[in-house]
Image (cartoon, rainbow, N blue to C red; front, side):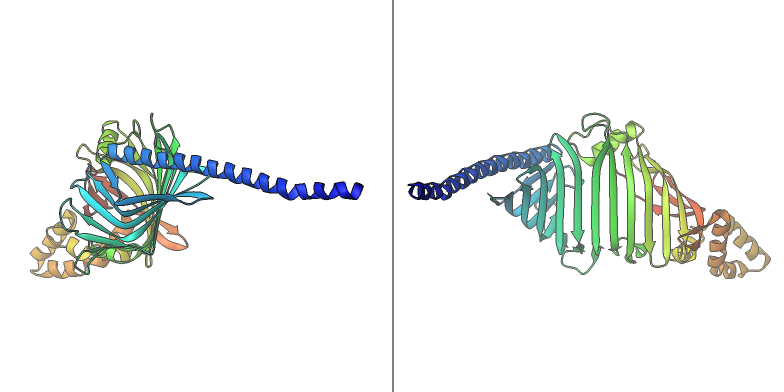
Length: 375
């Protein structure tokens, strides 16, 4: 009798196990559908937030999948219209996939498939961007964003129909996070930019030489972080006397190494105003790349040098031109004397002020160019 009763009891266990697995599967499927709904609403919330800032995102078709461990939203023929940009821009990419883990539906990871074309609305593309891998990650709800990261491997931006590169790099990483305040009141934003072997030959011969960069800046003075175009945000920053604090910046271009820190504001015209403490190793190799020969022309040379060259010409006609042609080493030596001798990463270096005067950039006594306005 005992053996007869024990057989049915043992047979009940597989049946109970199947029932439990079915129940767990149903609960997991219900949880997935709930998480998918949260993720989809989060994505739509981000799109609505961006639209209020003048950035409209579209898809030719959209599908949701990723069961059972995540939520995946695929957007084919993805497009973006940046209406707040001046001039407005229209971007188009082949494919975009937004993924959220089931247990973290408000952390959105997006991967892009190129190429990406850039054009003015209704016009033919003027630039094309490609990459081997492109990803962004956003933490937080649309009403309370926390961090945004962008990672690009081997990005190349080139002129459409030509061979000119606007920008290229082995890697570009951008991270922005809220370090104080809230999105509704007095937010303080930290921005970290890292570049590996980056070059922009289209813009300046000095930028054609690949460089590595690691820059950390803190944006202070914002009233809020409500959806709005960046030019409007910078305009509010200037009106409030806000600052862009360069906590640390390191740039290396071949043998030239430079580090800087300081604080910058904005002029009423939207241009950078302020000063950074710049320390440079191998300064003599940097100045020719910046166009030292052109700076030594009569129109651009510092007034003291022009006066000295003119005096030499009065003593002996032509002597001033001879001195001008050999003035490069003298300029470098003079700048080294005007700066503070120091050491940087085991190399002899000089510390100099890098000044921004309503957008005009000066390195020590030399004016080296201008930066465009931010609004």
